[in-house]
Image (cartoon, rainbow, N blue to C red; front, side):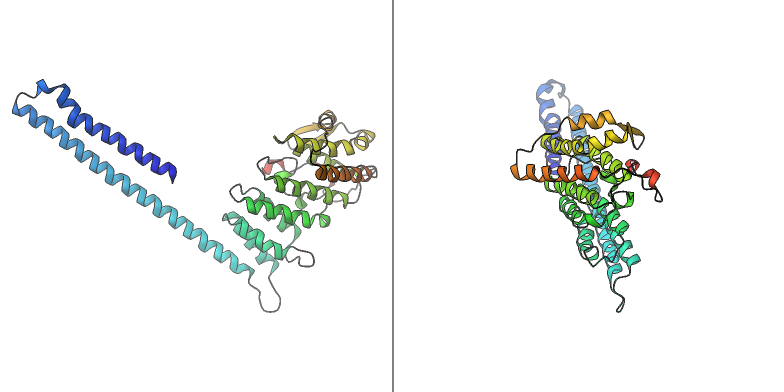
Length: 324
């Protein structure tokens, strides 16, 4: 709105200056040219033509702006109606409650319609302890979409909170149990509280996953993605470096040198460089929490001395970087 008013002001000033030059400036500067009546009529015709052009341009401009406003209003109305129709998918059918397939369709439809906050509000009831009326995979897809909604910071926060609440029921070795946005990557534009919730969710998920080399590789790649994701806060990078440092001894003992990440590799040297940035957080409370998690992570990683050959295990350490 401010930009529109500024453009209007500039447009009015521009036309005002043009008319002033035509009506006042030219006669004053070239007054000697208007000796004959015919020349006066010619000049008057030019002035009239300029005024007519101004009026025509003004009407066209107003018409275009009105059509644009109507288009925007129509688009908003269509989105609202579509969101309301998506909301009807959550209606209970008799005594059977909400149909899981309908709930999944409704959640994903709402995120596509820019209604991530509403989708997360509904997910609070659908994906809670003892109330898992949607699959984990559906919930993660909806959370991933909410984390990507840059214009809805509250939706991002709720998504991170939900992920943290349910982290202990997730499997670190399953790619569909973790949002692809932060699977080997990071979004530094997320809010501070949202970031801390995502860190805690990752740690809680990992520490409750059966210790094996698959899970160890997964958290190594995910932590490095957070560290290397253009995070401007040096304290955040220091905390992530501390966590990487905690798992580094076990990674070295297993002899790993390369970790696949999309179309390029994270090397042992990369992880060692990240570990070198380990630093205590100046906030004593956060420092103690990170230190506690690092200690738990170190003990957990020491048990990761075997490979779990479940279905899809070959893709364990390959995050969904192509979906960002």
